[in-house]
Image (cartoon, rainbow, N blue to C red; front, top):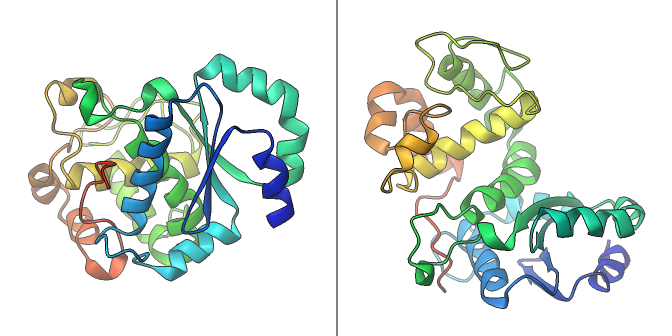
Length: 247
């Protein structure tokens, strides 16, 4: 893995490791937004901020799965980058999660826009960490605990995105390109970030209600008590403090 990462380092102007997990960024990604992403990753993994990862097992799984964040200025830059270097990336066998410069929102921006760093970094941790290190609870299958909870949240088990969700569903993701694994990843992301207060900002409910309705911990506790119990179970190892990217 080391040699593969060394080759990738030459393709990116910004590189950093957080507990051995690599972050790559192009020259057009602002340094402060690159740093913010690294800090959010660190805060998710070291949620009590004692300088050590909360779960060595989780970090070990992320490293073994060669998980890495890749930061680009925007989608056109990503597309150009892939056109030039896709073979090298495939050869490196690194599992990437992309994030764009203008999606990274800092407190100093004084913006009401949602900071997508919270979502994309969590997806990386979930896809190559939680789902692999604790498949019984977080595995991307209908029989895992999170899979069973998602079935309840959607009003039934749907391998593919249904044309119409039942009225009782509170999680109604409609992206046809999001496969079953993706649906579970999105469900857990919504649950964790809503439980930590990230989805309760001004106008946020109106933005997300077509996909997710339980945007506060109180709503989760009232409408999905089993999900609330999992999200707040200390043995599950989920974050209890929302990262702010400030260290």
